[in-house]
Length: 473
Ligand code: NDP
Image (tube, rainbow, N blue to C red; front, side):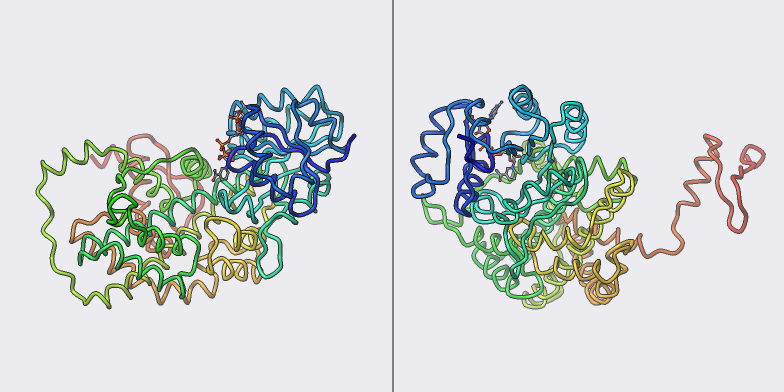
């Protein structure tokens, strides 16, 4: 009885919600979970949607339940569990069947798996999914890397379950092999930068004028109605407004200031470094999470160094809030410019031809970094697909010209007050560095040639030259 259109393995947070989403859109989905008790509770919660769900007791049953060519989505933790499931499915699958890895895989693993499966004729689709639990259930953003034929087999299901932005599905084929997982990785890298900058602005308002969590939440709520409109600003307002169920104090005030991280932020930084593309806002955000985890060391160091004297804020709170809104938007633009530049470089390196405007479009709804800004980014890439850097796209030149003074003042004042703003500072340094016609690398080249005879190019002449450094000594 091969009646299901698609299969899904792994009914955890993401898998269970994706399966319900698929069933709700009218597609029959066969499901299997390693631990039977989880399957039971999933079935119990499925309600009417159970009609479109085929619950299977074994992977064999799951494969038998799907119409060939069979697509099976894996929603299991990245790494070994994915390899284990591929090994389990391999003998059950036939040529043309499709394994869709929907987890947060490292794109190098996806590329390896595509190659390993190629001889058997089994397709491996690397599918980045963003939107968390809620997105998985009601519409995530879906970034697909695959052979085009495999994409066409699953396209209708994925576009049905994806989030919609003004009716357009936020799911797209982005290229072959690891393209989808790479784009998801950079999505998460940008998410790290976005969250860090928001946290820095919160810190300035908390530790500068000493505003309460509730007051800061109200500011974010207001900002969400304007230029900063985005999911992360919206939830920040809600997080700041939420009281602790135990005693009514703002919950955020009693959460330990130690941030966790998994792999994708770090992978973004590694890939950017390997490509030689600056992604300093993402790097700063990843490093800030690392520093946050050193709680005991920070406490120790805080006793060794007296607090930096905090000069009073030069402006009123109202002026400060207006300035911070502009600074945050400027920082965000720089972070997105970096993320897109990394994707452009990776696209050339791996021959993916990543469609930048499409990526911006499928991030406009469903995913964690969805924001009004992405619509402007999509338009900029539509107007000029080969834009080298977002910061030189006309609409962004206008925005950065208007916004960067506020970023400058914010970073400068925070430094004087001893308030750390690593990601906002990185954004400002990137902006200033990117628009310098004459930088300082001439000195670095001189140093490199001095100690290592690495050579340099001389202004106005071609070919590698060396300095007569030894004679000069
Ligand atoms: P959960 O921990 O909630 O669920 C994991 C699922 O995988 C469970 O069903 C578990 O089964 C199964 N599983 C674990 N190990 C194996 C294995 N070796 N073989 C077979 N099944 C296994 O994870 P999530 O749903 O949160 O995440 C799944 C993937 O989606 C991850 O790659 C994650 O990074 C990614 N992701 C998560 C997001 C989120 O917001 N949570 C957002 C976007 C992507 P069992 O019941 O037997 O333990």
